[in-house]
Length: 454
Ligand code: NDP
Image 1 (cartoon, rainbow, N blue to C red):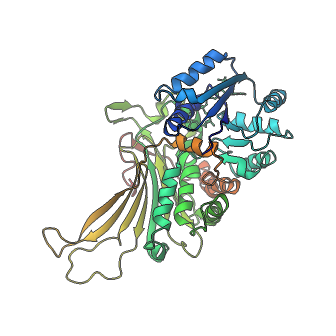
Image 2: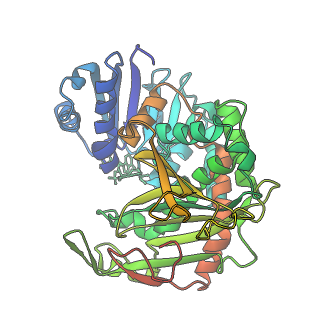
Image 3: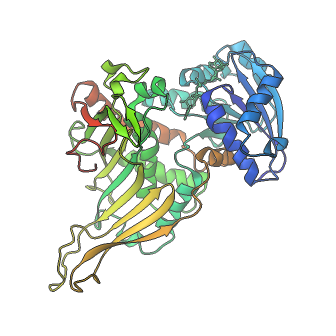
């Protein structure tokens, strides 16, 4: 960890992401790392004097007393970053090694990067890009081309806060440092993989973004395909920025929607009025800021295949949704049944055991078929459970930690970002053509009744 101050310059410093996630996470990081020093700069379109900017930072740091003393609160620039002259003036003030965080609406980010073209950024400038990264493969590629014209790929950080560093490392540690898995980690022994991110929260005021994205783009296209890549990749020689990302990219290139008909391999649904805990929730279609005619899904499930020798034929089911009965974020690897259960052991297991990684709080569960109940000859299921560590760090705390240290290995590389759009395009096309109609589920339920993953 660097002890010399790093400058974090947030474009969009008056926005929701900054006040709710970036600044509190920076404070949490400083509480954990007393040696770290940061110079904080910000900008937005609205005028904001230095006192107002200091107050904004102070409020966001209030849960971590003392940490504010380790931040030098630099200037707040009022500028329209889509304007080339304004951007040039701003670039002129950058110190070498500044982390420039684009906490801006996606269209503004794109316009700002376009406005920067042809400018020389100081040595070591890191560009941190928020999601969504483009709208499709073409726009992601255009954005990548503009970014790499400004700085080398190793200085571009495509933030995936969902994939917190400790979760990723846990997943890799369990999978790659235990000899028991690799011999069975293939279509020969694995029947299916489910990667699920169910939330019990609903829109939380984010209709403006979510109604245009929907569950598939919000979660499956971005985060869950990254998890798929980690689960399916060949063991890399190292987890440095090149080896790890080569291994993931190779899997993403081999990934496509399972079968010939994307409408058959995907389904979508949205919540109707219901109750979660003690809260009544209106139908998604009646939520503020939602355009019901858009048919945006709040629950999506898509089945993919990784078409290579290790995985061909194994369904990778990726599912995510909102306003569901319970939060459930996990990778479930189901093994094929054993070829023969010895006669005399009662009960026929339907699978050959199951390995579940929870995607935070981090834990691992291994479901085994065992005997030892009331009837000593009868098989029953038992789970071995392991706590994989703290799991308490805020996801943006880990992002900021990596950013300030210039560690890009766990962020998404340009080609991966493009592949993830390419992979889901057939489903988008099928849905746009009216195939796979939107189903319903009551808020607070586990999803439509006949969905096997519910
Ligand atoms: P907000 O709309 O709350 O904030 C946008 C910020 O951008 C404001 O500070 C605004 O400044 C600034 N801004 C807008 N237009 C310009 C411009 N032309 N020039 C300079 N600054 C401008 O957005 P969010 O904070 O919610 O989101 C920011 C990014 O983070 C988005 O890409 C979003 O997808 C992503 N994200 C957000 C999450 C969240 O929970 N909010 C979670 C994950 C990702 P001013 O107010 O002064 O105009």
